[in-house]
Length: 447
Image (cartoon, rainbow, N blue to C red; front, top):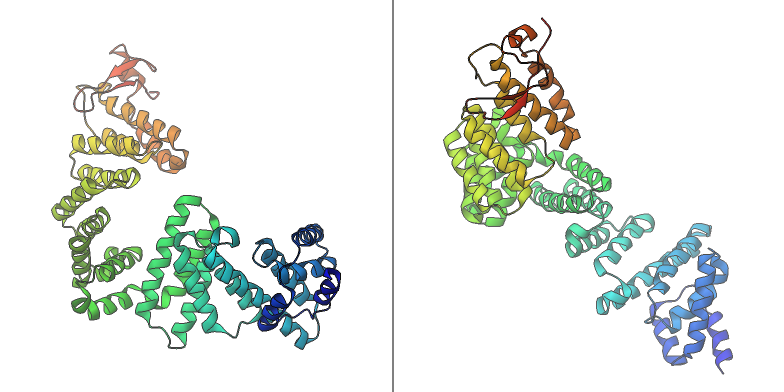
């Protein structure tokens, strides 16, 4: 009896419409488990060999009789039918094969919705289906867009960079055809960029960088500072209590560095958005953005106050280190070297193997004037060289910053004769007086 039914299964056409599939399953009833395992083993063996011709009958049997047992049926089915589609020359048959490929996707999505651990993540499957739709049904742009949208919304920062990139391509196409306006595209850009930024922190994948570059390029038509500011100026009064809208506006303006460009610094809406963002969200990041805005329009007192607020609120060590370092540079510019050094040291403690704080301390030392004679006045310079060398040792990436500073410091060394009379020679230990208060090594230049 089984062999007779098995022959009927094998005689079915390659294309299995959904209703016929249901009818067939009902007609055959439950198939022997041993036979299912046997056909699974046959299919697996042929698939491993890429022998699609011999794998196909076993795969069809499994799809008809064990659709809810194995995820591999759908992975193999995808591979098999793509091979069939590739080889088929007659267009009508090719179209039917393509229909079957998407029937396989739909069945897997149905099962994955019930059991994602067994059949895979629904969002990921939709993303893959979207890519195959682009290959074989590219005219269905709205449907492809919806698949990509649902995939990314489900997986967020776990989305494939390629899926995120394609999603934005189709969103950009919608803008071109008038189905999406610039504001919605800009908002989507912000969301997707945030996902990519998070993904890069986790994986450091170059594919993420490429995807972000694609987003940047496609968004240019809506993301120049003038367009953004005009758009936000128009909508600010109605949207200023919408925390999510204000947050995204602040992120986009910062990403495009509109607050740093001379021609836009006087735009009032810039300040309004950064201020509302800080007020509504109350986060360290929002206060940091507001601080940078004020620093860029030379309102340093306000800038430092808000920067201190962001330092107090921030819990992420790396971000806190960046905020402390920025405040250290502000104190350095104000020639408040002691406070600048304290802040730089705190930043260095929070972010090990980061050279910039030590370079900044070296700059302070190099510009300091200590000592009563020509030789001892070299003390701060020697201490600066110590910091530059240490920065380069722990953080080779800052070598380009260190090189010119070392050259500048070395030109300031006292001469051998100036130190000879103090009985100091190269390599001797020396204690720098004044605020520097560090031990260093004597270094001289030839007379």
